[in-house]
Length: 382
Image 1 (tube, one colour):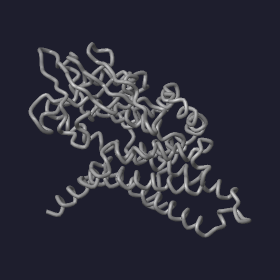
Image 2 (tube, one colour):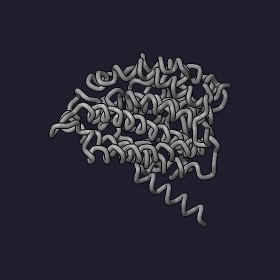
Image 3 (tube, helix red, strand yellow):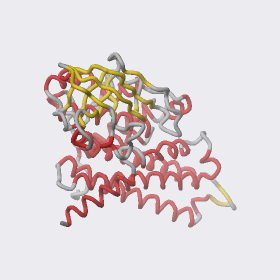
């Protein structure tokens, strides 16, 4: 065993996730995609294994694992369906934010339902007018006695209109990051409404919609952290979220490689299996090399985030950028090796191609990941 090997516990966690995926996700993923079906029953089954509260503390009912273990679980589930795995990741991020930063009252109020995924949470940061410039958000929360009155809209919200809770970044103060706070808002609070389900290229096993707040009265006790701490909380959540979305790209890309190896061994052209052509072998070699490199960086970044290393944010950004770009590139070459068949829904490659494409946009675009990496790198050099 070397310092780079997974521990016995980590291997057991990955094997559990792989078995669950093979039984409950992979056989159904194509149908979920085709029918735009949200597999809530399957997601709740994942929570029975603790996958709804992977890094929520044991004291709050979670399984209290680290970010590497979470990445292993997300990667394994994404092998069957990146869309469904990513949805579970978002719930984990929101639940962790409540557990890590919330007062005891808000934790007791919501975590008993979030851990088993009896209630599911969305993460609400992006707005129609603020994507990468997240600190420019306009949704306001004005204090009125023992409530905040929330007005504004959020965009591209996974679980919008379906999930019961919305961990929402709102403006309680002045301009910029320092005026942002975090509130837990319930679906059924008066004034909460939702846009139509978005028609997306991929991620079709989960609903996505705008969330609108029209004078929603939210109890002050639903504040997560202190006023003005919301942007810090949002960014802390994204360190882990970026690892998870990168892990989802790893899982989808691994599936694409495995499917492609099987295909090129069977497909014959010019009198022999196309796997015997050196061009095919070189392409496969590059796909595997790049995927392994991305995986190694992501696992290292996950260990740094778990340890609270000073460079954790830079490594999370680098790992997310590399894993998601690599995942899309690997799947694109897998589709090319499948030829016309890769373009058909009879094979999983086109679904993986569609699902992984959005990973370089969400949880911070890969251009923003480069900005973060450069900023942190230059700061460390001073």
